[in-house]
Image (cartoon, rainbow, N blue to C red; front, top):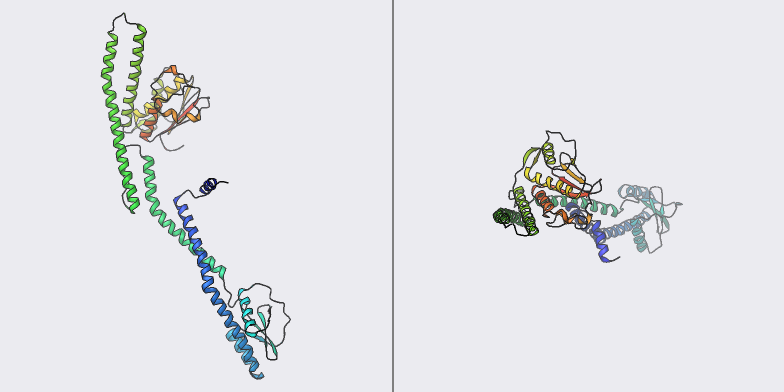
Length: 435
């Protein structure tokens, strides 16, 4: 597997949210810190303390055995009682038959090593019911001394769990605090960027917080204002040019009508076709400019759609469950322009066209040649035509679907292309919230 594929696989398993990625990064770093801290704690603190404690315990056992041997017999019971009460040590003269100690206890291993060093003998430990017993030969006695197995047990695992657990909690709370402070402005900026459609009345981002976020908000506000100004100037320029072109276009039509009768009729027809195409382009440009500047208003949705469908000469099937009094907040001219373009486009290339209306979307379907999935994004480009599946003789300015997409973007609508159940294309226009 190549390095690039491994990187791609690693990216796949990464959390998608900023909180998840920050928490994962801090968790990995804190886990490494916890491991290093536990190792350092064990090497520089726990091990030396455990070794010193084992040496002290071995010294206590040897000293207790020496003292017991040196005491007179009548004083030994009192000494044994004192050892039991003060040090939890039990001295036994009688040799007990006990199994060897087989379970692993770190402290007993150290203690056995220290005892062998002090006594210079190979001593053994035995496993009793509640105590650990060790042979301590002293003088002519073979004493056995019992002690608790967990009296000085080192809980290294518990220490590591506590460090890792507390570290994980601290990391999560810290990452949550950091991400909330960082993610909130970023989420707001992402929302503003998603809703931005080149309109000048967009609410600017607050320029507060850390320096980097202030710089991001300031640059976004500057970019949004410049784009809005650029789009407004472009629309104004396009509307002005389109309007001014009407005058020379009218003059050319008049000149064409005043031509002598001897002029070739086919030449006159070609000129008329060219003038008609220019007039269509100018009309599209003017309608687009008007639609992008339009304010939204409340309109009765179903009557509007029914009126527009009646304006077509060809019958269009209409399906809806929307009540006649349902009101939608829409830009009337822009919505009408988009709807008429979609239905007109279907009638131009198909035999049967149907319209389905809900409270938040319109679906225009046809039984035409359809649109290949690879071409669905390109058909919204100006002057782009599907020559392989569309008939060039149908004419058109090539701006219809481009105007549809631009108007949808300007008003926050969504336009998608799918496959129709009739075998052709299906245009889905979403203009409200919901499914």
